[in-house]
Figure 1: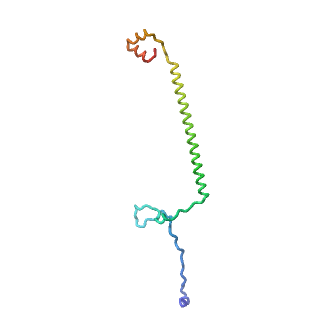
Figure 2: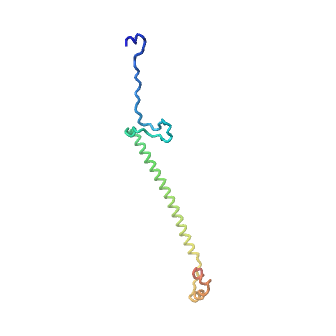
Figure 3: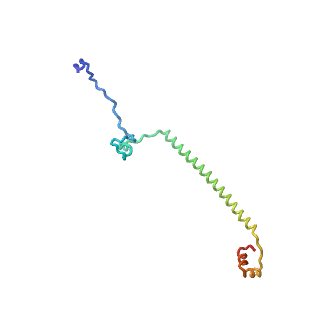
Length: 133
């Protein structure tokens, strides 16, 4: 070593950084041009524990989810109320229409003799069935 130092030869060995094992790589390049091989996580990631999230992040996500559910419920309740109000109005209008039809119906009292006479003709029978006479 002393002889090499005299000649000017560098004897120090550089130690490079040791590579960490890749645990979370998904889009790996195709090594053999296999177009059918889809990018997937490495098999070693199955054993590796997932990174834990901070408590504040968990609470933030939980709060966002609860706010979303609340807004969705409010919107759904408003929609249901609107539909039920429309249904109630429609049913009221239909019942009023039926009531008015019954009021405006023309009715005539027909005696038994007249009814017997009307039964003799086709037109009379039709009038008796319809109740328009």
